[in-house]
Amino acid sequence: MTRSEELFQRAIKRIPGGVNSPVRAFGSVDEAPRFIQGAVGSKIFDVDGKTYTDYIGSWGPMILGHNDERIKDAVIRASENGLSFGCATEREVEMAEFICEHIPHVEMIRMVNSGTEAVMSAIRTARGYTGKNKIIKFAGCYHGHTDAMLVSAGSGVMTSGVPDSAGVPKGCTQDTMIAVYNDLSSVEKLMEESRDQVAAVIVEPVAANMGVVPPKDGFLQGLRELCDKHKALLIFDEVITGFRLSFGGAAEYFGVTPDMVTYGKIIGAGMPVGAYGGRKEIMEMVAPSGPVYQAGTLSGNPIAMAAGLAQLKILWEDPDIYKRLFQKGELLFEGIRKLFTEKEIGYQVNAVASLGSIFFTETPVTDYQSAKTSDTKAFSKYFEYMLEHGVHLAPSQFEAIFLSDAHTEEDIRQFLDLIDRYFR
Ligand code: KE4
Image (cartoon, rainbow, N blue to C red; front, side, top):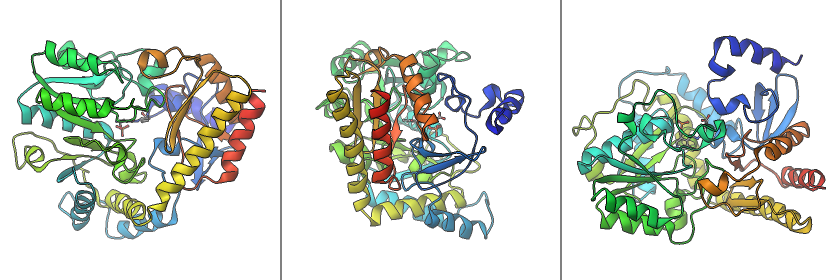
């Protein structure tokens, strides 16, 4: 028995499913989860001494690669003064100023501790600001596990094959309406049916929780126009895309301005940080400046702020990082497409910059329904092969490949070589 298997057996006794987040349980692939000892750059090391090239990157935060010395130094230095005070600190001001000064559509921002909290708070603020209750989300998009969002959700919910969650009373989801990703008419229909009672449309500007599904040309701009027409707020859930597609995230990358944005992952550099922000007039609704209540003991935690701010400053000061990430994405995803064409394999490769997925289906994947045509058993076999050969992917067809600045050309050649051999 490997150490990972032994640890998993112990974990299962004390932690539901043996993990602190369902998708880590490898539930949809025929493998025991690898327990990770450490990581550096593009490599992770498991407790049995095996090394893998990592394409999870902690689900997005590790855009610079694992264990970056600059981030580690910032955390160690900040921790010398204590871990948490429950009082205001200078670093929170610096973090808020840095984001607001570099992201035009974020005039004010509030720190929280996860993407889920950011989404939950943004929705409450949108409802408080508009005085309306209805929320439109898209089937297959995942916005964290707040009750109102656990309807036709992606990520671990979709992986489990159960589209919703037990324990969520109807009352929590009766105001959540489900539209079809990339289908503006499905949004317009819901807006008209609800007679403009829609507080907000929340969207992953690049869906990455049903696998990666890019917005069709005009989709995001169309949402912008529909929200303006029906006096609803447009919320970009940029927990994955924020500071990844560009420093200004998907909003900058596609040139569409949301009313509010949610962040997570990269802004914490691996520490628990989420945030929500937007126009001043909206954000001033949030307590204690306004009537929308939201709070958190560890929100704006000084150590987490030190890590996040260090990472954002590196990303801002070296814009070539985004060029390199884009090139790596091109090299990997175009490389896979080329191999599939040569081998007459009809599987789909969806990608935007450093984010992508292989879908085990011959159907073009543009939304939840088409994503669900994927052969998850075939994905599982491919996942196991890659793991055996030293490549650690997200253990689900409905997650993404995350590239980092630490991935090398050699790493990408390794990936392509394995694809070439596996799909012989
Ligand atoms: P967290 O609460 O997990 O920090 O963020 C929730 C969330 C919100 N919005 C988007 C677009 C997200 O992708 C996420 C979380 N992403 C998943 C990965 N697909 C987290 C991994 C996990 O659940 O363990």
